[in-house]
Image (cartoon, rainbow over all chains, first blue to last red; front, side, top):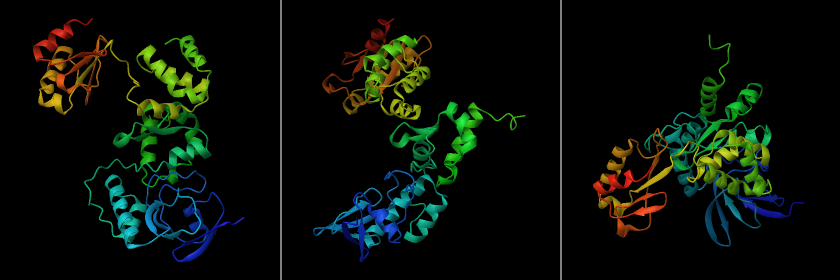
Length: 200
Length: 150
């Protein structure tokens, strides 16, 4: 039941009701960069790098494609001078937190982002929520979550759950774009449930 | 906090997960802070993951995950109070109680917080203790007001 027709980068595409612009683009083989997107997880819209330009009824605006539902007769542009400029800034802002993340370095090269444009604040976490959401939605262990808010927001394990579940799973480890998650896990482990084999 | 008391508050809200915030607020006001055991009990009873409760408890300033003193001292450091000398009031309070903003003293007598406006700038510098407003404070007055609390 393909009932929604619209255009991405000049290509006519069709979508089912409820699909996001990003999903449609992926299906059609059109590349849109993402950081916080994961097939198995609900869209989150945290990293904003999948931002695209949407033209509908004559006016253009910027939307985040991973949470924007496909709509009839819209014209989507995944690369335009404006999109590229905004994406560059987003990458630069993220790099203030995680200067050495491989995915960010790759994007920086594509969009010409200057890694040192903003003052460094190496928190290493870019709040993509992949680990938190994976643990809640797929692993269903709820071993870690976000705490605090705004600039103080960070990820935090529940030691009691982590001690029981994490050693056998660790499925969130490869998801983290910055390796900060691993650091948090090692810290939590060292503080609250040290492995007897490691501490002699 | 006794488990019966926690259950009583949860039961009052029919043990529904949608009332999580209300339950947490009531636990906070009856116990003054939210110990981990309390949050665990709430998590079990409402079938809400502890991570979610932890997120909420750290998100809102109304909740405290550390014990709080018997008296809550709020010092306004908003613009109006600031220009009228709030920093001197804060210094006096820090000296009298021996603690900095965000801390609680050993005897659990005072918890000091700074706030950004109490909505009565004409009375600045303002100090609020347990909801009672003390306006137009001077350092000397501040010290004597604090002495009235046990």
